[in-house]
Length: 122
Image 1 (cartoon, rainbow, N blue to C red):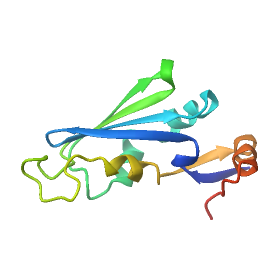
Image 2: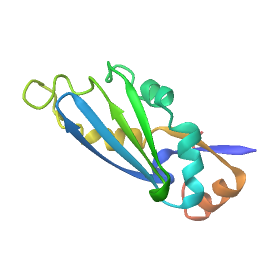
Image 3: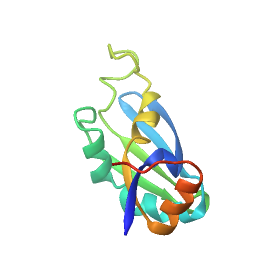
Image 4: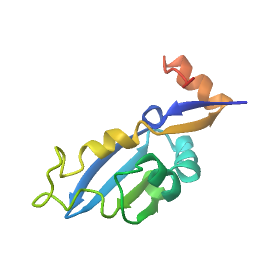
């Protein structure tokens, strides 16, 4: 058995930019959540989650010593700060957006999350 939760229940994130490229760090709250990031926060899953926003490559770098992944989203900011008409040309809101991504957790983790008042997705 398993349950689905938003990524924000097991990780936090920071985002920034360099031109038209957005960089997102996703950091697990606990070491036991890191394997979930590795298994489910894949370039393919991130591309699907950001459909319509990212027009270039999605590259993931694993950072096991800090239980994190770094995601590089190319052609993702409408040309970058000096060229974009976007409300967020820096991509800061992309950190919040990735945390809305659904992930599946096992029953033990689901139980711990629910004990903390977190609700699984329908």
